[in-house]
Amino acid sequence: MNRRAEGAIVVLCVVSGITVALAMAVAWGPKQECVLQIPKIIGCAIGAYEGLAGGLIAAGGAVFAGWLAWSAARDQIDLAKRQTAEGALLNLEALHASAEFELSRLATAKETMLRLKERLLEKSNDTAPQARRLAEMSRRQEFLSTSQDINTQSMGGKLWESANRLRMLAQHIESRVSTTSAENRPGLFQLFEPDAAAAIEDFCAVTSEIDPFIVKQQMVVNDLKLGLTEAHRKLDRN
Image 1 (cartoon, one colour):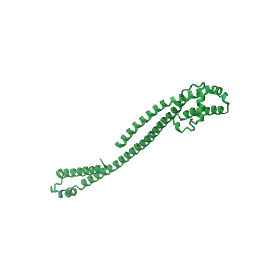
Image 2 (cartoon, rainbow, N blue to C red):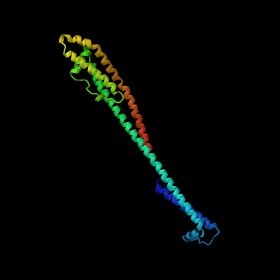
Image 3 (cartoon, rainbow, N blue to C red):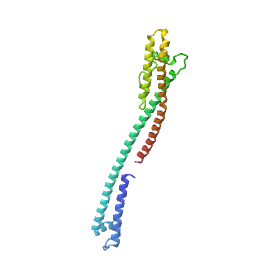
Image 4 (cartoon, rainbow, N blue to C red):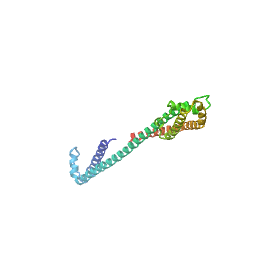
């Protein structure tokens, strides 16, 4: 119910109360000179019971003034509640957007890391397959040069550390191989093979850690979505 309708009801109740009180005074009071004829009886009742009428009107005015003060305070409280609800909703929307963005970054990072992993684990009959593959990938510039595609808030630093370690090792192997004679290169690849294998193993292990983060982040997104739904309901109620 809006304030205007409430005010009309309050005025109607006040007028009705005054009318009933004056009617009772006219009907059973000591002064019986008023003629029961509308609208003459109204003026007569007010004149005959001037003190009572004045008191009733003053009381009615006080009631109406009290309602005005109460309704104004109630509207202020409702406005404060709505502003609080709107603020909470805006905060949840920002958190939800941030969580969804992080989820999308994790998905992009996973795709990027898996693409490199697949290339690193290609089968080969070479005696030092991993060291030779790193050198070849470095020569073709297949490694990540920036952290842009794996930059996530939750594990971006760890992903980049693993990928960059692999890239630096590959560059080192390729640099050494490029300055070594052809007949000495097989031995050089054999020398770097343990380090290459360890770096690739670490890279694959770190890549496998992305899925749990994605599952956890999806749960965060879902929880925030439920919170948004509830916040919208509260705002609609206010």
